[in-house]
Image 1 (tube, rainbow, N blue to C red):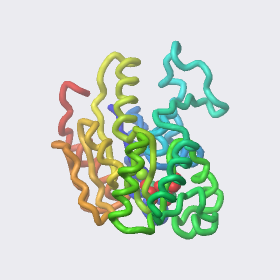
Image 2: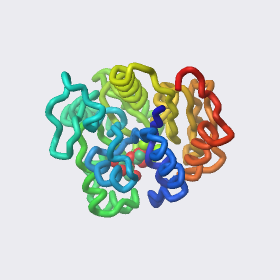
Image 3: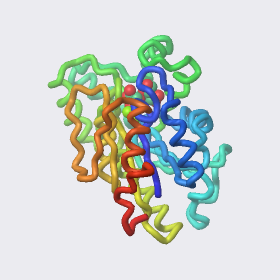
Length: 277
Ligand code: 2M8
Ligand code: MG
Ligand code: MG
């Protein structure tokens, strides 16, 4: 089995990034040998200390909304990946370079007179104030490789115009928590499928998959798995994944995360443990 999870607003609290309500389940999943795979808007630099703190350093991860996949040695293919980075990870790019994204954003901002601030242009103190990250964490959030978050300051129509313009460049615009995120033609769902294919190739069987998320950018991920949890969130937009095996949590954040895992994989709830597992 594999568990894929969004971080902010899901495994981590939207405001203070606490995950204590999810701790008992993290321990139990570790004992069961079930990888908990972060699939997040965060950068791989933010993920390094966070995976360590969460006890997830042996699991792969998806960073920057599907733009990057990080593989620890056990997930590498001897033939395909030979050169891990100094942290022992092989990084796969599924998106496009941040330089191209920033270049196109600058052009569309000018052409459409669009009102937004890219994260890379936010002064550090403002980034700290609006996210609640510490200063060192905010520095790591700035080290982006395949996605640019935007603080949107314009209206709905401007957003659609920007989306259309970027689509012509092969770029996507998705809503995260506080930010809108610009990426290449990648998303969380594609990255999850990539990892499921890799697991299947290495282990010789398809895993049973569960995914948990709270935002619009999580929808493709929730649609790419066998069982899904939509965590109660902070969104005004209706979020409705095309997923028959969907559980909507009653509570938000890490408590909703624990509620969702218990729903599908709890002691009395061995639902869906079909031939897949
Ligand atoms: C941004 O991502 C979140 C998650 O969805 C958002 O859009 O609100 C990213 O900049 C990420 O790198 C950062 O850690 C996070 C902090 O809240 O904000
Ligand atoms: Mg989220
Ligand atoms: Mg996220």
